[in-house]
Amino acid sequence: MPRSPTAANDRKPSVTDIATNDIYERQAHLEQIVENLLAEAARQGATAAEAAASTSAGLETTVRLGEVETVEHTRDNGLGITVYMGHRKGSASTSDLGPEAVRDAVAAACAIASHTQEDPCTGLADPQRMATRAPDLDLYHPWALQLEDAIGLAIECEDAARAADPRVVNSEGASVTSHNGIHVYGNSQGFVGGYPTSRHGLSCAVIGQEGESMQRDYWWSAARAAEDLEPAASVGRRAGERAVARLGARQISTRQAPILFSAQIAAGLVRHLVSAITGASLYRQASFLLDHLDRQIFPELVRISEEPLLPRGLASAPFDGDGVATAPKDLVAEGVLRSYLLDAYSACRLGMETTGNAGGVRNLQVAMGEMDRDALIREMHTGLFVTELMGHGINPVTGDYSRGAAGFWVERGEIQFPVEEITIAGNLKQMFLGLAAVGDDCDFTGSTRTGSWLIDGMTIAGK
Image 1 (cartoon, rainbow, N blue to C red):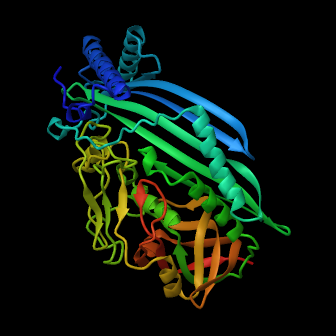
Image 2: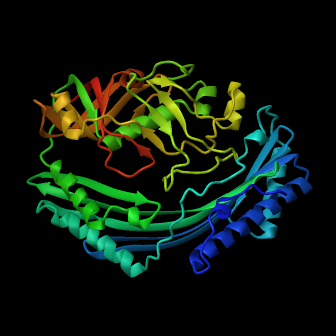
């Protein structure tokens, strides 16, 4: 079976780089397993098949109050096979990558397919859309992290949080994580491709107290390469400062007011957009943005793009879960919805073409404005600055939105006091259209990058 070029072909590791050589040898081994599996599926009578194989290893340690609380070493394998008998589909999975387990998984998938109902949209993606080249996206940066060093970083992080303010009185712990893995996908149309990845992280959560008021908050950093992580002391200090800033929080009365969503909370609003324009939501008619393609859903100032080929991006990938090549695209341009997010199956159900989004969306970026957070607070003048949301009060069909919230009350363009035990409510369609400004204050790591969002007016339910 011919192979599509993989990231390993574009990036020639040094002969002295033993870790890198090892990862690409394991990638080649997984690719061979996938090829064997596809051949076995054909032997057992499948008219088409696809498979995904992965392996990963990692280290995670947590300290609390200066003492090691957990140490976890992980090593996982996974193999999923989907076979097609005409327009019938069956799937099976195993964590055993041995030849016998592969044969058994194929047999199980074929048995399931023989009993399922035909679906005319079931099948592989268009072979012309397969990725023919997997560019090196710089996703693999192994961290030679010894357990003692990981513990030391976690202690440094927690110590910085506890030293940030005398009112930090307790800790839920600080964690350091490091994971490496390989993902390989192949199908019976001749595509086999894979790439290695790494992901590292630091996080800390602490508790502040002043009188009878107690508040918890956290901070974190994640990156493909360890050198891109925020310093451990900075992560801890940020966690401590966020916790004590919320001390003395109170309720406010029910009212209508503008709301400023902090950048990390605004990223959640982007995810609600993603859910509404995903193929499964659309063909099931379970979306408040049904039939909104090429319609205005935001003010003209808004541009939201997907950047799946972003070097070192936390969600970057050269091809999607169908083997379709990924490519940058605008989801929203000048406030107009320009693209849905479709895999091969949902595209068929909708009478459209795949957008290369099998497995999800990859690296969303909201074009930022010119105002920092302080400027946005001044622009809002009077309203609520939201820094935490609770609950899941969202109706995906109507867009009705109701969430528990906490944050800070703003008057005369300045923060006055922290707020808690309130609910904010609105409708996502109106909220999107009411987006007055996007800040330039993206200060967190993640696959969705945006500044804070200032929305004209929402209902705040309090005392």
